[in-house]
Image (cartoon, rainbow, N blue to C red; front, top):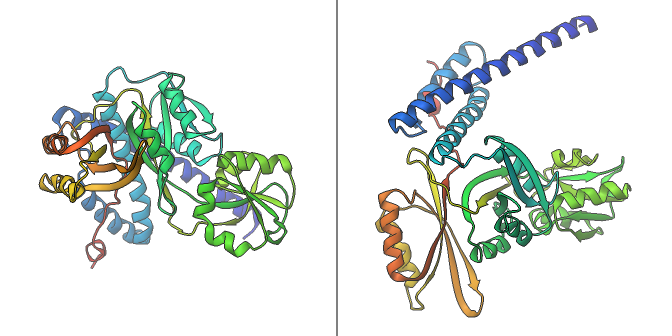
Length: 393
């Protein structure tokens, strides 16, 4: 193919890409109109049966046009997720009149390029108002920014699929009056980032946050004689390597974050688990109301009576009220040796009957119980269709 012919094909591809963007924007606008109807008629945001039928229809249409079913499924999983999250955001905004701010001041760990920064960008991209990012050097500083009204929100990492729970954040939640108002899950893709053209065997010093080192321990074990230096955030690690500008130093972080500091990746997919995700929570000074049409999650903190079976008794309350628990974490109670405070994530809305009754029952049998927040669940499970039903005869 001659160069002019190649240029013509590429130009046509660019035209089609532009048309795709216009069509996606029009589709999003229409789904917002659907949300208006759901608000008026109290219809749940998700209609899984409708999503399944839509996906089967699209897969069959795609096959007729020579498109692979897996490709079509991947594309429309993203489209459906975007639609659901936008509708949830719209319903949440309507349920909390006066909560929309012209400027969202958000505190997070690190600076531009950190995973918390990327999560902040992702979460507030669906919220109205401009975003003012406030980078902090510790979790306690982040929480104090919101408590002292120097920030409106805070984004905090709470757990990772590879390294587990982030205990320091749980300890902060134990001692604050802030409420959890949202959550999001963000993919963590660790890469080895350098400032100059170099090779892996030349790296002598490696900078990263302690959690990152824990998530990439297998890779570190393979490196051999490399000095590992912990630093307070991923963005600080990237800034350090950028400033040193040497071939024997590197940072571990995201490629997107590294680009902000002029760093390039010489090795990717460093995490022990290739499907590596971090869950973040969003906290504010006031709780939010979650519409009953929106899937909700509630986080509780409680301490049980010091007797055999007390925790089991508390968990049976959830079972008896058909409440699904998605997380149970224990942390020591300061000043009370050998006593634990328990954190629970459950599916349900505190404005709904079953969870209300469960919380009332728990209060009667626990020494202490507090709702840390009820908030929209943003864990959107992909729509699944049976392979046989998606393939044309």
